[in-house]
Amino acid sequence: MSKSEKKKAGTQEKEFDKSLPVKFTDAEIRMLKDALALSTSELIQLEDEKAEQNKAIGEEIKTVRSDIVSMAKKIKDGFENRLIKCKAIFYPDKDKAEIVRTDSGEIIGSRSMTPDEYQMEIFS
Image (cartoon, rainbow, N blue to C red):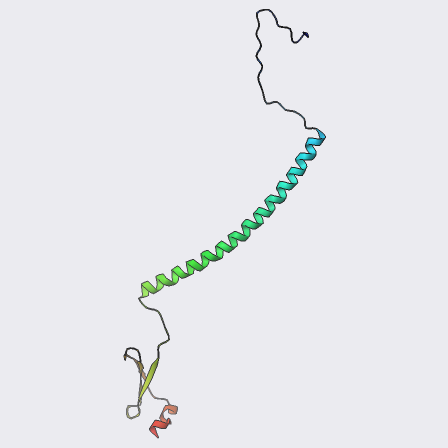
């Protein structure tokens, strides 16, 4: 038994693990550098992919939000503008033209007749 391993009379020993600083070898440092380079490259790639996905999701969110705003406006207003066939009914003796919706027969306006309308074939 070495001097440090000798037990003193009346003493006891117990072995245990303790975290202590250990200087890296050159080989360990090379391995850490390689691993760091690989992890850095992977991180950059993942961040780029995340940015692309966020952009795509952001565009989808904008589209859905736009749909929601449009539908909410329609509900709030109670109508939307659509192309509806209309016809003009001319009353040359009153210098008037009435605009009528063909889907409902509702008169939606009236105006004075234009000079060209007086020249139409039906009045000749």
